[in-house]
Length: 429
Image (cartoon, rainbow, N blue to C red):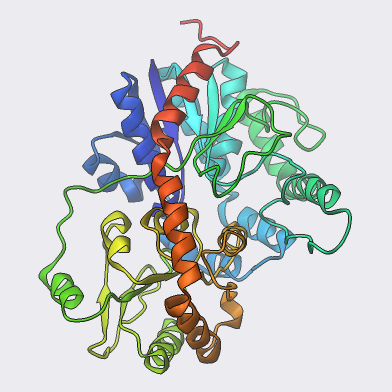
């Protein structure tokens, strides 16, 4: 089977697919990974064939004014969807053209949520077997709301009804925002009639789908069908990475530090955020590793109790930390759970508030601090709780054993190969 795996976004949106791709290669699949040229070196370093889905840089996109506005949408679902349209809508036409070429050279396609609108209609139109491999829960359920909507307060009735309705609202809002652009692409590239209702056909509702998170973190809802499965996380271990001497010296010089990093999250004022972090650390008396990330945190002078890192794989770093502070990206949250470390989440937008609430509900995190509410007092208080609450640590260690016992990559590989081989769509070459 010649398979193309499509994804787009920051490193957190790509790295799980590197692990999944390696698993598919081990299973005998001929595979290439199609993503932004920004990640070409990363893809090739991990032994996968690269294909340029787009030349757009996700870092430049998030650093733009439209990207910063998206990061600032917080828990507002309509603002979030509108910002996504404004930021990435122009890529749909170009990506659809690339996917058409991919379909000529592939027996099947597997794709992320971020490439769904380009891949699913083309695969359906040309009769190419396709499946979704997704990182955020997207299928309607009564078990929990759409990740773009807040949790319904537990003490109020109608919670399960509210949960299901949020998916309908999300789809209707998204449809109103993308309908014209999506139908233009359908006609221009695919010769298809316009879709007239939101998500009323297979072009917008791919089937089957495997989710790359743990059932111990998000239990699989009973109202999902058999073509929608949860495999466990797709972890990528970077065994060739070697820590720099400065990192080893810092770790040996005192008690295990706290990790603080926000990954690909940009900041309008990274200096202010750095100042808040440093003062909160001083008040709590903690050592820390500060990851600069795309925002460039910690660019100035730092105290001896803080070491700035440009990059280090989470699978090596997190088990050596006392606790974690991060933005709640799905990949970072999963790596923290695997390491058995309690985490404070400072979410910004999209699915980050969802993962923040999941970690709190699981008892491995203090209440999250939304980024717009971050200040010295709140962060210092949370850091003290994070590093002194033995219950948080004990629950994190228990959950880590459950997460590590799963074989998410191989479970997803088995599901995808079986689903694609049984697909009613077949190429006629």
